[in-house]
Length: 512
Image (tube, rainbow, N blue to C red; front, side, top):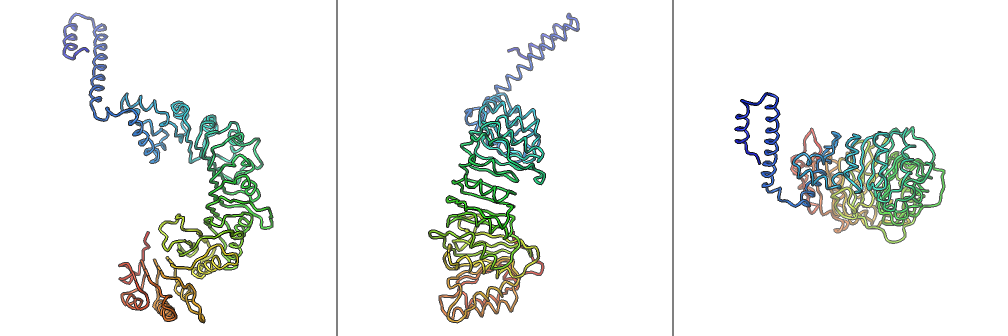
């Protein structure tokens, strides 16, 4: 290696005799040699760092974690792949990254240049394709879908005017590695109608287990999606949906949103013997009842509903008769209900097999209903308790058990409905197993509290086994220390947070 002092000495000795052009050439050569020497020295120095001693396999794992973190944080939003970062550190890291095809398999950007780079560097590794906005058909989507045989995860959106071409592309090749397929069309009202020209994925998609589509003709799913475990559909017609479900005997999770339904339609029931959870969103009773009437569900299926146009107990009775028409076997034992008043137009109620509800998605919650009202409502607690009576005392009973815990949040005027439900009529008492009453974020009036104490006293005198064991209050107004003392005469344990003990405040802020 040429040393710096000798280089400088050589330049000085030659400068007096060489012409300017020759001298510049020699200096440029010396500078190039010096630059190369510095590069080699830096490389050797970097090699002494502890991280340079890591095996390539460990570096690869680190790179993959870094790529995932930056990708999830939105680094790709600048249209530059997150994995490019590590290639700009040093030559060794670049070589390791380029030899790791799994680092380049996440496709989520639109730049034609980087798209080509990612497709090339990922080699034959299965691809994960995920786009959150409509993809350009010519520069992006066609190029991505040309690799359909090695795509493992495919999620994208398309403009409605491109749907026909998109379906043709999806039907052009088999997808033997595809496990998840999610497709949404923008401007669904302008989608073309009618089936596509051929079977999607040429009918060859053996590993597909998860599908999510909206406003699509489900005729292309027949027999192609027989191995599905999870299906989410939005905006399809009930006859098309039923035809598709008949070809999905292994389905375990089903989500339906904005289903189009005619109440006069009558079709044979579709058995879904393996279904574990069904969600029906953005629907009215007029739609929900026919949908469930055409599905034969397992007795232990978990149900989540988002309903509009609430009409009263009779409507709920019709709905649950359609849902639980083939109980067959023993159902779950329900122990608690949790009702939340979000605002004057939106409330929710959950029925659980445990006394407490820690997470809205817990498997203990077997029935979950959200209500959306066109006009403000006032009789929320009555609706909730009516539903409990309907689902546990129906002629073809699916659920069993006695109510052990009631949790109410955000209601006004709730106490009157509760005391009416707990009142003893004759020799029988309602809810004999009730032990826990929990109130949260409520304004309590003195006359309501007095009525509640009287009812609880009456139940205890009627039968000591009817007494409430726990009364819990959080973020409640007008429940003072004196009220705590009075309720402890009829309730074993009264537990209040500091806000409630302080009597609340006139300007209330709900807890998150």
